[in-house]
Length: 153
Image 1: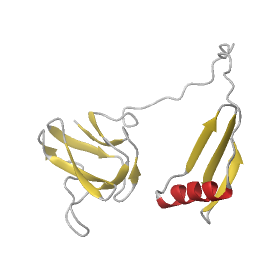
Image 2: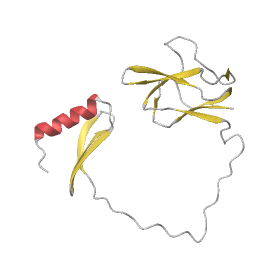
Image 3: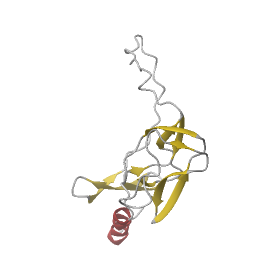
Image 4: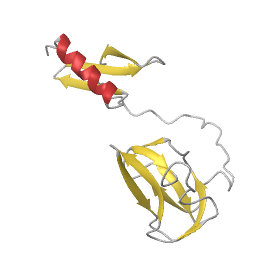
């Protein structure tokens, strides 16, 4: 794999312009990874480590102490998850009242938030009826595909 400087600069710009944290290109046993790093946001190149599959670990003779979860630690209800990567917005516009708050009763099909992806505002609807018992993300926070946004009981 012959990486030219101009090509690497284009990849670095791609990482920066699309708010990616890293990109890896592989060709046989050679690879290049470009990562956005540090507080300054500079793009850093690092060689990719070879992929090695590890053997499954043997069970430990003594299990570590289990953490005790109380009922308040375990989320209750049906999760509403993000169908895409984007930014979570609780309200239709800045300064507006949020679609829902903890304690609100929602109906199936009711809009509960927005996930912005690629400058498109995607309304997220509840798939179930019930009471909102927990909102798991902050307004404006980035969310991943499948991340729980809230729970409805």
